[in-house]
Length: 436
Image 1 (cartoon, rainbow, N blue to C red):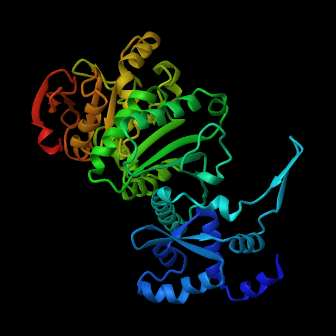
Image 2 (cartoon, rainbow, N blue to C red):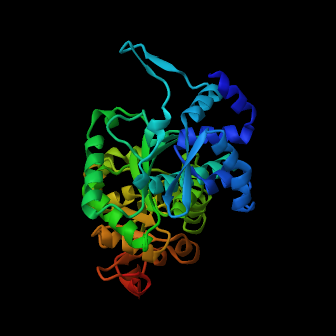
Image 3 (cartoon, one colour):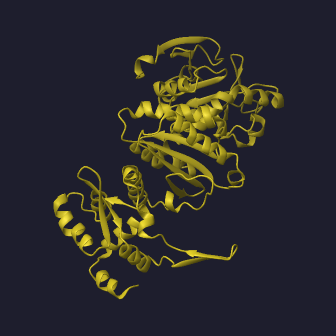
C-alpha cells in the first residue's frame, strides 16, 4: 500500500470502509443507497449527509461521482479507493491457477469496475434489490453469498445480472426495466436454452431459480405477462425442480423469497403447512411427497401425493366412482415449472396409468382464481384434462368437491356437484377481475 494512502486511511471510519467495500462488490451506489444501507441514517437531510460524508470521500479521492440521470448521482471507486479495499479486505494481488499454471491479477481495477453511463440506471435498480435483500436476510439470520455479474465465476456459459447462493440453490437475479423487446427477450431465453442443454448445467448439482424482477415500467403486470409468455414458449420444457423461474416486482420477489421460496428449502413454509393441514384435518387426506412416483409420472416434479385411505384395508377410497388420490402443487410463487406440469399432465397421467392401471388427477393450489386464469391463458392452458384448481381459502371454507374448480376457455369457473368430479356447477366468471 502506498505510503500516502495511510494518511487517507486514518480519516476513514468503519462505515466509510464498508462503503468502499460495497462499491467494489456492487460497482456503484447512489448517495441515497449509501445513506440508507451503509450509514443507516435514512432520516438525515440529504444535503447534510452529502456535506458530512460524500464531500469528505470526494476530497480524499477514494470515490468519484457520476451524474447518470438529471440531478441523480452514483459513486464509483477510484484507483486509491480500490487500493484501500484491497488492503483492508485482503483482496489478493495475484491468483495462481494450479491447473493452467497461469498467474493472473486477483482484483479489478477502478476502470474495470466503472459502468457505461447508459447502463448505470439498471445497476442502481439491481443494487437496490440486493441491498434490501441483504437487510432482511441479516435480520432473519439467513446465510447467503452474492456475486454481481462482474464476479460470477461459477458459470461460464451464462451470465445473470447477479447471483445469490443460498443453501442448495443458485438464485439468478435478472433485473428488467422494460427496455428489452419481445425479440430481445426471446434471444435471452435462447441463450438460456443453450446453457440448459450444456454439460455445465447437466453436471451442476445445485438448483437454479431465476428471479426475474420487473421494475420502472408503466404497467408491471403487462410486462410480467410478456416475460412469462416468451419464457414459456421458448424454454418452457426445461422448467423443473432443478431449474425454475418466478416473475414480479422487487417487492413481490422479496416477499416470495422470504415468505415462500426460502422457507420451502427448510420445509418451514407456514402457508404451505396450513394448506396441507387443511387437506388432512378438514378433508381427510393422507399426504406424502410425490418424489417416489416421479418415474411413473413421466419425470414430473410434482411435490405432493395425497389420497384418502381406508383405515382397515389401507386401500384408496372410492367416492362417487372416483379414486380419491391426486398429485398436488402449491402455485403461490407462480413458478413456471408448475405451468409446465399443467401443460404436460395428460401425458404424465398416461405414463402413470401404464404402470398402475389407473389415471391420476392433478390439483394446483393457486393464490387466487384471477391470477391463475391470467397465467394459464398466457400459456394457452386454461383447460387441461384431469387438472383441477383450488385456493387456500376455498380449502378452508368449502367441501372438497366445491373447493376444486376448473375453467372454461372464456374464464368461467365451475366447481363440482360431488367428489366424483364429473358434474360441473357454474359458479362465476373471472374475466371481470382481469385487466385486459
